[in-house]
Amino acid sequence: MVDLARAALGTIHRGPERSVNALRSAIVTTPSDRQIRTERVFDAPRERVWRAMTEPLLVAQWWCRGNKLVVERLELIHGGHWRFVEHAPDGVHGYGGRVRSGTPRPDI
Image (cartoon, rainbow, N blue to C red; front, side):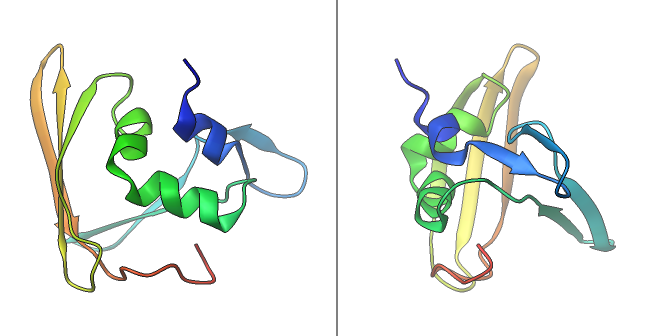
């Protein structure tokens, strides 16, 4: 079976000379004590990246380190909620947050 998310995302580029697996590298910063920001650049069309980030079946393929993921909520509107639950060997882990923008932007 083809992993649709990996096919959609392809590779990530960090600088003109380096390219690494899209699922392994990111720039992570903490702008405040309540925010975590993750930045990645993908070598894929924006439409494919948007689908991989917003379609529950595709999100479940790349989010959880190979573990089962349940997308409980994914409200693609400004201020909407998202909640994903990972079922890992060491237990169940929930992740969630708010959607800043529910429409594709030029920088995505």
